[in-house]
Image 1 (spheres, rainbow, N blue to C red):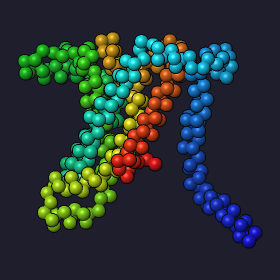
Image 2 (image 1 turned 135 degrees about the vertical axis):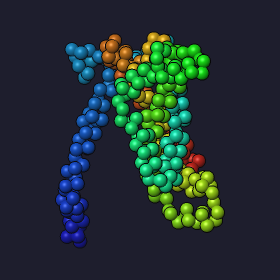
Image 3 (image 1 turned 180 degrees about the vertical axis):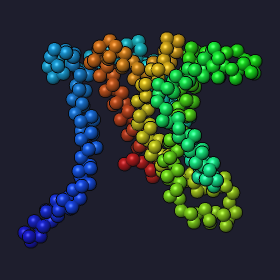
Image 4 (image 1 turned 180 degrees about the horizontal axis):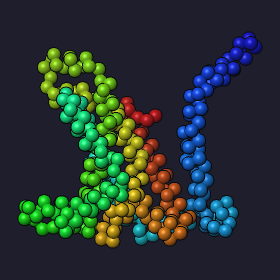
Amino acid sequence: MRTNKKACGLRPWMQMKKSRQLYLLLLIPLAYIILFCYVPMYGATLAFKEFNPAAGILGSSWVGLKHFARFFNSPSCWSVIKNTFVLSALNLIISLPFPIILAISLNECKNRLINKTVQMVTYAPYFISTVIMVALLMQWSSINGGLFNNILGLFGRDPVNLFGDAKYFRPVYILSNIWQFTGFNSIIYLAALSSVDVSMYEAAKVDGASKLQKIWFIDLPSILPTIIILLILNAGQIMNLGFDKVYLMQNQLNVQVSEIIATYTYKVGLLDLDFSYSTAIGLLNSVVNVILLFSVNLFSRKISENSLW
C-alpha cells in the first residue's frame, strides 16, 4: 500500500517531466500574466490613498472612500457614465449581427475566388492602426473636398461636418467599428460553422429545405452557443470602451457625448496628475464590469443552457 501511495504521488511529477517542453512553453504566457496583470494590482490601493510621490504607494496616507465620493459628487460623473454605457451598448447591439451575416454568407459561397477576395477585403481594415483609421475618417468627412461631402454634393445636399457636430459622433464611431472589425470577428463564426455536421445539410436538402431554411434551422442554432459566449464576454467589457479611438475623434465640439470614462480618467490622471482619483474611477469601472459579466452570465444560464460557467 505504501509503495502504491508513493507511486501515485510521483505519477503527476513523472507526467510533468515527460511533458516538460510544453510546461516550458507555458512559462512565457504565465510570466506575462503574473507580471502585467497581477503584480500591478497592488497599485489599486491608490484608490483608497492620497498619493504622495515622495512616500510612494505604500507610504501614502489612507483616505478611505474619499475619491469615490468625490467622483459621484462631481458634475461630470453621470454624463461620463451615460456616454460610456450608451456608446458601448449601441456599438455592441448594432455591430453584433454583421460578422454573423458575413460568416454565413461566406459559408454559403461556393466560389473560392470570390470567397477569398471578400475575406481579404473585409479582414484588411482590422490591421489598420487606429491613428490611421481616424485620420482617414477625418479626410473622408472633410468639408473641403472630403469624399462623403462630395457624394452629398452630387445629390444637391449641403456639406456636413461629421466631427464638428455632437449628434454624428456615435454613428461615425459605430459605423467605422463595423467596417474595421466585422471581417476579423467573422473568423470565429466561420470556425463554428465549419464544425457543423454535413449530414444535416444533406438531410435538409432531401427534405426540400431552401437556403434560408438551412440557415435558420441549421446554421444559426449551430453557432448560437458561440454567439452567446461572445455576447457575455463583450457585455462584461461594456464599460471598458476603447480609449484611443474615442480620444482621437474627440474635440471641443463633440466632447459632451464623446467624454467617456477612459478619456476622463486619462485627463484627470495623467494631465492633471491626480493619480489617486483616476485610480478610484478605474477601479470602480472594473467592479461594474465584473458585476455585468456575472449578471449576463447568470441571465444566459437561466434562459438557455449556454454560459461561461
